Length: 305
Image (cartoon, rainbow, N blue to C red; front, side, top):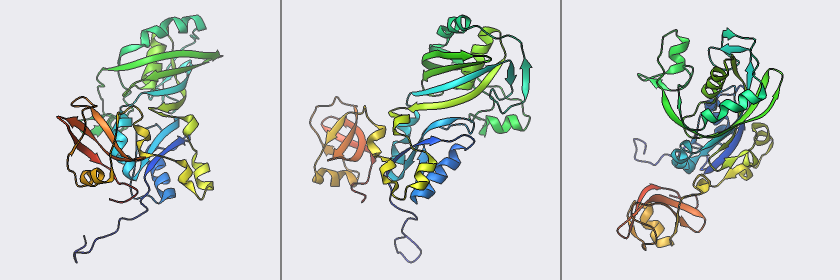
């Protein structure tokens, strides 16, 4: 409310849903979100999983109520395509950084395939010092650019599969399916070290984030050219394809909108996280316990509170 006790309207439109953006090269994730929010004139926007400016591909952007489901996508599995250019290593592990090493070693296809099994499963990985990881409250890349020596701690990441797709001259192309927190640039660095070669990531494209892949994606150019952009919106619940579902009626939805528990049958074990729906609309996410559903996140229904 304003000082006179009147309700202030939120700036922008009450747009709710996911835009699966095929992010272009050289555009940062924050600027991409800002551009999509501006195109939809949305009240609120966020994204699931930062994508480097030098990377292209899937950047899921949440508008309105979809921002409440961002945490579920941040933890989701991801897939990438990437190229390693052999011969030169760089400070940033990609084509942007200063050269740190050169080598005439050009690994053969059989040698590359032989080392890849080392990089599947739970793998120890040191993130790039040019990354968004926070160290003492500051981004690692800000410290690195300021010339501050930073020690990046080893972490365990999950890599489900990494495959060599093709090799041509100095460049080898790969695909990788991985879990949260995996850095492809670090993976490429470690592959090069295992091969006794110098190299860097010369192309990086994200092809999947959780349930979203390139088949659902849209480019900025397409959004800008389409006056009715609603066809590019995926439902809020699209981020939760594997979450158990509980259907309710209008009276129960009203109770949930007030943040109240509602009685449910015991179809779901206690502690199970479920999505609650009124027809096709996601009303709440929460857990079942002792015959009650406890809402943790409550969503708008048909665009109204």
